[in-house]
Amino acid sequence: MHGGGRLAWSSRLSGFQSDLKAVAIAAVALLRHKLSRRRPPPPRPSHLARPEQPSGVIALLEKYTPRRIGVVATAVILLGSAGLGIVKGGHIDEFVQAMDDARNAVANIAGFRIEQVAISGRKQLTQDEILAIGGVNGRSSLLFLDAAAVRDKLKGNPWIAEATVLKFYPGELQIDIVERTAFARWQLDGRAAVIADDGAVLEPYVARRFMSLPLVVGSGAGNRAKDFLALLARYPQVQAQTRAAALIGERRWNIWLTNGLVIRLPEHDVGNSLAMLTKLDQDDKLFSRDITAIDMRLPDRLTVRLSDNAAKAREELFKDKKSKKKAGDA
Picture (cartoon, rainbow, N blue to C red):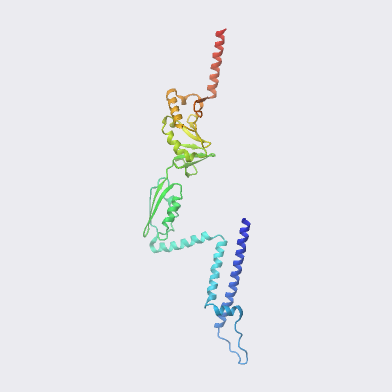
């Protein structure tokens, strides 16, 4: 499909170039004829015949075209050739930027240079970052600055939820923004990012200042983090010891405590499970015991996995009890 498109474009371009060549030949011929007619005719003997009158294409062009058409056609051809070179060379953006810089330079000379910029509402972004996002630089003039376009560029940045851009002539620009708030760290496939509460990625990396944010892991966790973390906040006994929360299969959550304990929560009635964990930790110090996992996926039971050392000690304890019982029976 792409090869056919290139061939069609090449064919159209060749036809356009052939037409330009034909028009150029005719225009140059007409221009030469016009110029030759303006020269004073040389004296000729009376016995010589009158010069032949133009005929064919030249005669038709002379009869039905306005004066100076050759000059106009030549100028059009030159402009068309320049435009074609810009398009074929891939310099359209550079040409547009050059034209924009030229008109801004004229406006700045006329007194419409941006002399003062007032920005309000920024917290995470710097003034230079905001101006760069909006496309405002030292060459911009207030006269030709498109406030709506600057606003759209600002709102296209994930940090900016809303923006207002006002121009006060001759040289003051005011920008008011509403920033999104960094809500959590989201890890997926080993890569961490900073997200807002709606799951939007604010930064594709985690700077040091965001390391204190809660960590959620897994596909879909970014979009569902707000609801789960709000539920977890209702149980501070568990929240205070939570290091990370992982969405499993985009259905249910596991939470990791700071001591390495993994708690596998059920898909439904998560609040009841968190309430049970709170009570067990308050009454029996569950989180401080020598265990590695708590499984709450089944509604009628809670399963605890002991650490290797605890399992070995428990096994030895049972062996001692069994040997003592046999000794007593004997």
